[in-house]
Length: 149
Ligand SMILES: [Cu+2]
Image (cartoon, rainbow, N blue to C red):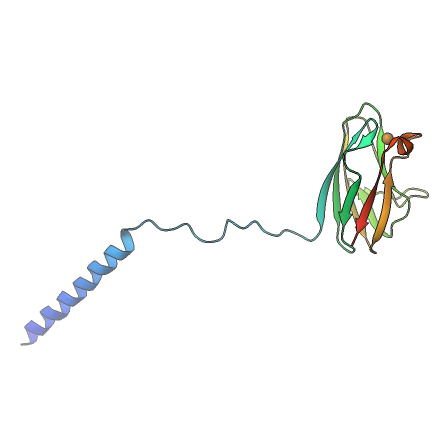
């Protein structure tokens, strides 16, 4: 009687193992969730701006007060150009260095065929004109508006 009971228990145990083996090993596992969603990254936004002879690739940039706006600038022209904002409260850097200049809160000169990374963290919402200070360039159309919300 005791042996018989033991055999039943062993039988049940091995049946359970078989079921476990089937359900576990058979099907291909779905890829783990996650990995699809890219991380939101840090705060702030970025934009690209190309300086040409004589225009900007865009006349409209936008940012958010208190958050860094990174502007990746490429000068594709044969002339030196710049990206300048006379008055905007906050901080601004060009390639990691303070981009403030006399009379200008942002002044980022970019040599012909050069590049630069401007990071502006405006402290207040508003609209700010950006332009090229090289004589005649602003009048020729090298200007635009940065809108900060
Ligand atoms: Cu210019």
